[in-house]
Length: 289
Image (cartoon, rainbow, N blue to C red; front, side):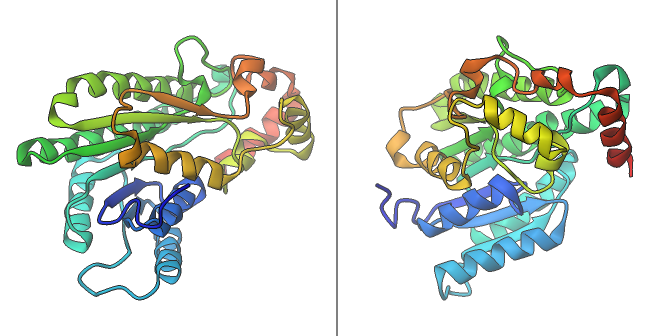
């Protein structure tokens, strides 16, 4: 279904590319010929992802390595600018951006601090804008086409939302609006923007914050129409299609991949209303450590 050289000569930047879905996409894109630049705030997972890319793609010429990385806080525009300069130096001009960096946790909104709200919105919404604008400015000034893929959430739609993840819902809704707005504005520059709205995909770190106990996980799994969680390779293959030449007429679209979970009931985390206060207090104290 996917030709081995489908993404040959492409240079893809993935934010939050060291773990979870970002790592899965990085490895899959590399398998199909792309050179991958990953960024995030922790160096170790970024380095490990690049090592896995190099191991899976075989020997590379020194002038064109299969993967490279830089630590970067996408909330800081100057840091993003410096990271992009390094990506160009390491791999050449970036032609594809995947905005995957995110922050999320379950919280009773009345207990949420302004700092916690600010942190999530700045990573998800500001970070996406910083990376997207910085690259698009270069693409437009040089006349180069570009592709942007934003990872949002099933509750990003204005018709949905979700209780207990209000900072993420607000930020992801903003990213979805940005995706659709810029798809129209920049189409004349041959820049495409699309989004993926994943449902539940087990990932390192975020999973324990969103489904903190086995009991909660089992209850939510039992309510899932397909009775299973998403597999990373399923999302990675969808991402391949949306950044590939096979989808050149797809622009401003958001594709949901959640096994029909959101159709069962709007608000992915609304069932958290059943979590008892004692469990909330345990989660909140763990998050503060």
